[in-house]
Image 1 (tube, one colour):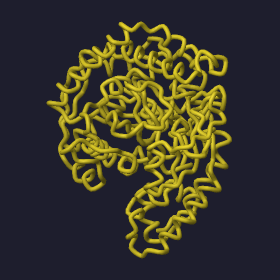
Image 2 (cartoon, rainbow, N blue to C red):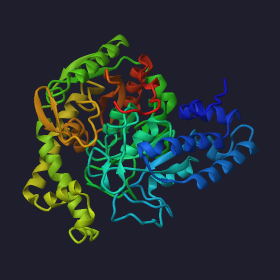
Image 3 (cartoon, rainbow, N blue to C red):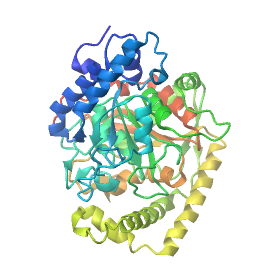
Length: 480
């Protein structure tokens, strides 16, 4: 049945939309107009987009429609891409030629780059239609997306809650049907945190698989770029478009391989240390329920040891602090324009200037120990099963949360289960695994071996096929 309403169109998967486009049952302009209509209606309350490219998106859609009309079988090279004619968004730290790129900052408020980032160029080459640039935590240096310059991004499931960050606008827009998918960055969980809190799929690929050339950096050693989507298959489609080269002999992720692999019996690791040491009971139960689902599909789950992960927070903080401050100093932004930063980012840049060289270098020793922990585990299992975040989305402005009777900052709570995979560069994905009684999403994290995106996505797909969490979408956002 051909979708007709705005909502039916907006919540099509990329794969469904691509199929309907090729059958000429819908047009790219239908998809763009549905997305723009939702942006017009929902963005004033959610604040997910900083820049909306309505005119250029409609122009691209008309051009794509002409391509579909010209070819009966989609034989043109660009029509072979499932993203051809599909409306997407980009986090506002990806350079876009001639389009304002702020990185959520006051300093870059009026910057119009002369070149595209590699990700933007790859999406354009795949025929994706850019709807606009999404709001984010300032300079990607935080996890709430509570932006002092452009306003807070609001969670589409409850407007008084954070969407996570720093890719909060990308996750919120995708979850709310304002775009079909997005691309974000992840230095300490900035793809997986908002994916989990907004109830969508977020993939942080192996370090270096997706180029960060043309991305305003946070910390070069830890920066990743990757897709946010409403299904595992859509995340795979996005990854295919933006990924660079895999090492020789490593099969790239693709839909056919994904579905073939998803029927396998997987070996999953349940971490003995770190990941379950301080988790909200609701999240703990959701992850345990997910493990039961995996067992029902034939997966074997065994305990694995990751003894050095407890050292990851201090080590990763020292790397991020030092490298972020170095970048801002190198650009002449800090400390010369310190008064133009938000208070939280300014304080972290100040902290970065105080990181000792010995502590920075010691952090890389910890990184190597952690890499060895993961590699030892991956000799026995295909992926590690863990929570994406230990809590559901806290209220906007909340500084501390209490987990298992202990107070912790919101920042610490949300990054600590994500930082390990940034430190080691292993691919990690967050998929929806349940909702709290208040209707807030929870996320399951799977971490796999380097360059193991194909199998990692297949494992995530096996879980998605056995559950229905990904089929839920936020309606009209309300206060919880």
